[in-house]
Length: 276
Image 1: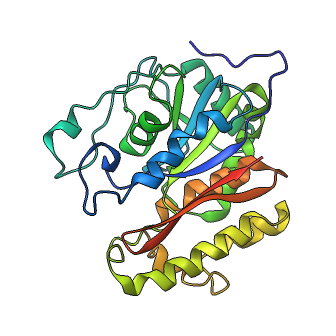
Image 2: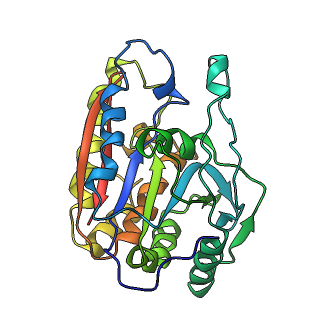
Image 3: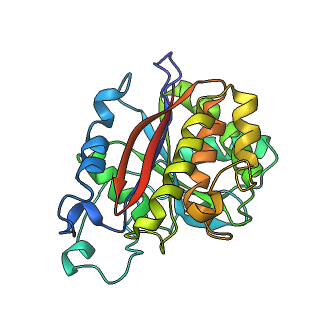
């Protein structure tokens, strides 16, 4: 079972990563190079870290619960929660160990912050977790703790969720929010979506670079008119792919943020963010 080290270790950054569309990095696409740059950026993550992570805490856009829920299986299975893709994409493997002891440590932190966290030893790693991790950490030898979002979709609560997890960074855990900075499925492939996605993406880049208090205030109110095209990028009730960024921003604390990757995929801008 994974317990984070007690001796001083390098503090890990916090990441928000785009996890792509279904198993997109492991199948043919049209155009063929649609996801190549995103895959290349994901593969570069390990070399960008200050040290090998003791564990990965991944907050996935594809798991919503009333209270924060943590995967506690010692050897999590995979949850193939995508549909209509080539048969071989349902045979992918990612045998990373789980982190049940770390799940209990994280649960204690969340409880101290006033949440009522739950442990779930049955749910496997969904594609918001195992697909990008299979690209970034193909050896599958770092323990993975998968965590849910809140079904309330409340922005401020997700920032607070991240704040509760901050101590894990100093113990060697790499906290990753896995989602998409643009997730209006009607917009992909439509050139009319490009200006809206670009405007919202620039707003996100500007926002994550602000001091902590201003950053939190803007992200908590992201759906307001102050965030251009926010609801075009994330329709009402479907913002689960943005919320992992808010958890990441909360876990960042005072660490400065920056957009560290951006690409135009299928006519829309998508980006990754990092807090050091």
